[in-house]
Image 1 (spheres, rainbow, N blue to C red):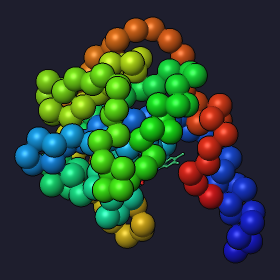
Image 2 (image 1 turned 60 degrees about the vertical axis):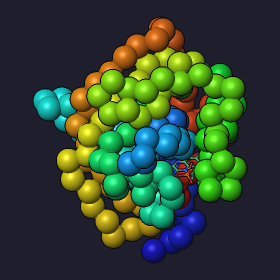
Image 3 (image 1 turned 135 degrees about the vertical axis):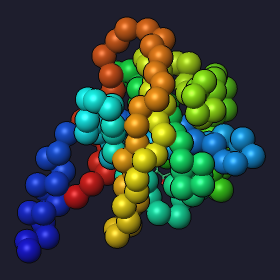
Length: 160
Ligand SMILES: Cc1cc2nc3c(=O)[nH]c(=O)nc-3n(C[C@H](O)[C@H](O)[C@H](O)COP(=O)(O)O)c2cc1C
């Protein structure tokens, strides 16, 4: 395969950029920025998320089977940036950002986001450097109207 072409072509996939909230079994919360997320069924409502193997977030999802996706608004690149770094290095990533715990999963959702949806894992698939979670949307909320943050607007890439 032409490696450069693969990278360019895969970077042609368009994405949103989200903050994905997790918790461990003791209720300790964390969140990470992710773009490998899409809906895959209307009924039941299903999404897939790819979470990097070995991160604290992936391990939390693996143990609890839940996560919550906060949909960021256009212009919120700074919030996305706040959640890139590994929790084991930087500690609490939420800082001054207010969050609440989703009623269905107990996972954190950002109050500055446009909306959120809570997910319960149904199946997972390994094999690559990210683990793929197929999850049912079991709760959702809307904080305000607005245009969602697109990956392209940030200049970031995660893919290729
Ligand atoms: C633009 C961008 C997009 C990312 N998308 C994902 C993703 O879809 N899935 C993922 O597991 N990590 C993704 N990451 C990496 C995580 O944000 C990163 O591994 C984070 O440190 C994980 O947090 P944790 O160590 O506190 O669990 C992305 C990073 C960047 C910069």
